[in-house]
Length: 208
Image 1 (cartoon, rainbow, N blue to C red):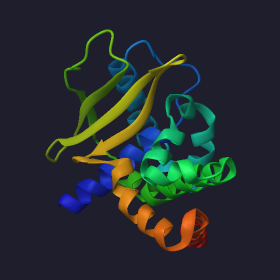
Image 2: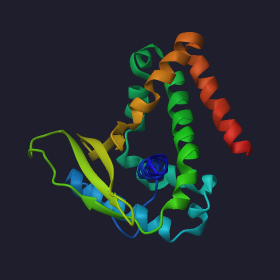
Image 3: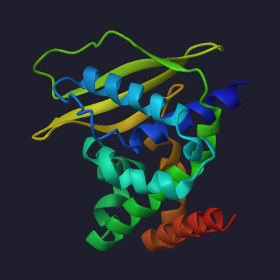
């Protein structure tokens, strides 16, 4: 049961970082909790009404990643956190490759979980933040027929508005899930080795 919940919420987390909003509805970026609430509602609604997404259409998901939601996500910061202290050692080109491969990995890894989204709804928890705060954690729960599942977001305030830079699925922050394995790969084979390893995983998944 716990593994199933983790798989489902991992899918929601990845989707939260990589999904499109209908163009007819603008996202309210004035407050972090309002942003997350509207994104979450749109995400759930879109998944429930799109058979291709429910079927795990990775090409469609990838197309949506670069369409609308990326302005609300700092994927460079997520990747840098996962890579840890080695990020500063990477060249700009290596950093670019790491971001692209990591994003692809997350979308491919969690796309299968989208088929499990059926009757879930979002519940917002009270925002514990002051008006002057520039970094906050927005806490939510995904509720359905089973027990509520924790899904939290870290955001910071940029000149363009609030941006997501990490997601907590059942008590584990997304970037932290990969930090140890990334460090081990870099220690053994360098930054290029991590890029090659991520690319190999993505190529293997695409070939299935």
